[in-house]
Image (tube, rainbow, N blue to C red; front, side, top):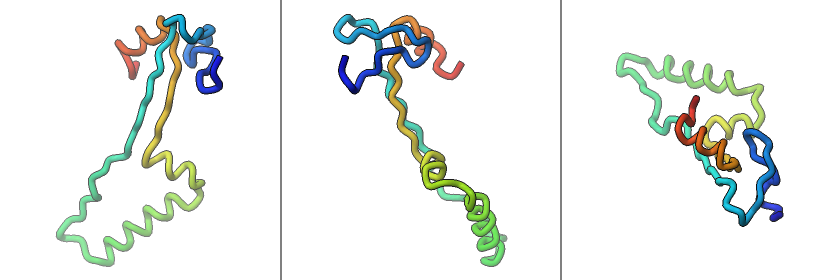
Length: 93
């Protein structure tokens, strides 16, 4: 089996067999909301600076990887045919 393809389904653990048409490769890419934060015209520059500082404080104890995962995440799943059929019909359920 190729080093790129795991030997087991990520959902149920059944053995995958490349070349036998018994699995699917599912690629998921997620991005954080790309719109800039809303700043009210009534906010003073000091209030905006305080909000920015509050947001920075929330991230101080997070690793670089945790911060990056909050912005962009890419996953590749290998699913057997049965798991794929269940997943594609209800990907969030």
